[in-house]
Image (cartoon, rainbow, N blue to C red; front, side, top):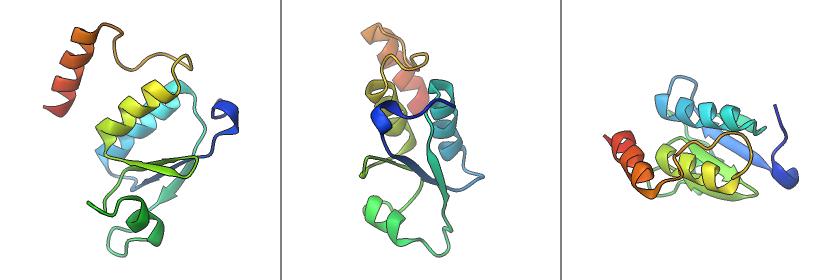
Length: 107
């Protein structure tokens, strides 16, 4: 797997059986971004999770260079924008097609 751009530190907080975490893992792998996976215990949430997502206190959370991004759809869009030019684009270039893809992802 390719290293994160510019020596970036990338962590993914998740649980193995979450389809929302899996969505983020698929995009990270598709883009070839190396990351540290941190398995969370949702019955005894860790300090990193609580500090990274204080509103919802749930996974997934992507931490990029110390900055947390929660919610799988937001994370996927962030990855596509932050690593533009690395691996294939996840969303179409055309604004209407991007909006349509976002609609169906939310559905």
